[in-house]
Length: 423
Ligand SMILES: *Cc1c(COP(=O)(O)O)cnc(C)c1O
Image (cartoon, rainbow, N blue to C red; front, side, top):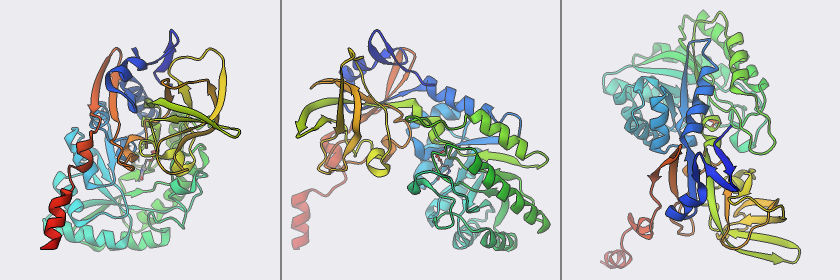
């Protein structure tokens, strides 16, 4: 359920006509719905009301400060994967006691920053990382709370690039290695193992992989109890999928019921790290048709949004529903929707049938709230799009459109650089 609907033949973001926002801010333009965001968070979080739990929104799905502020106000914690995401979460007012820090490559300075912020815990992915966290914590006279990320070797049945819980993936520790790592953690003075963690993948559309992973974690939990390790937190990661096209992922309510049932009798706080399911359908990317052309028997709609703005179709072959901002009159066309970038992989949609559009018309790519703007780049020296947050009939520009100066602002001026190389 989201708040991008047609009224009087015009696509609206909540109560504002998308075309009006484009008139003011231009294209390409990301538009988010605050009401949808809050609703998705509440629907997810309340699905676990029957059990001690903490919902840690995965910042990487959409890290705009407005997202983080809205979610922090709703009481959400965050799952971060870098020092930059810690900075954003703190800036947005997220309670540090609700921050968990995941990721395979934490640098010393990032560990220090997280220790100074006094976050809830580190999700540790290797023995060397555990040793580094212990050293860094010792250096600043702190004890770091840690979970070890266990790779349960479960097939999430999703795209290979976003599968993370198979034994060939780079994430986490095998169960055998994790046991040894817990023993090591117990013996180290500056880390305290308080949790277990896993995250098996993204855009999961079935319940069974979650349940399979939880079964393996529970079994492992039993072994830890025997070792005298008291686990307070069971972190099952994120990964619940959304509907882009015809997928029918389980509703959070269903996941909640099943997990609560499975965790009965276990004295742990459940942590969840949802990203896509919270953010995905809160946003659209609006783009203007520049040209249409037909080569042989193929029609192309060339728009001003490209793979630098929304890379998911190019990277994963992902589907985003494409619709015309002005409701069609029934006439349809079948075309590839492509951007201006000099790569044949630059497309938003292939062989798609949608209401006929012409030069100057606006198209919207739906479900662009997660892994959309955050994955954008300046490739082909394209300034990044603006982002708007809408609530009811109000809107705020939450990130300005970049300008040409932003493209070169951090670069050494060409001539000065050449002058210095000569010396
Ligand atoms: C990406 C990621 C998430 C969020 O995944 P979604 O599929 O967006 O819910 C959660 N936890 C970790 C460790 C991640 O890497």
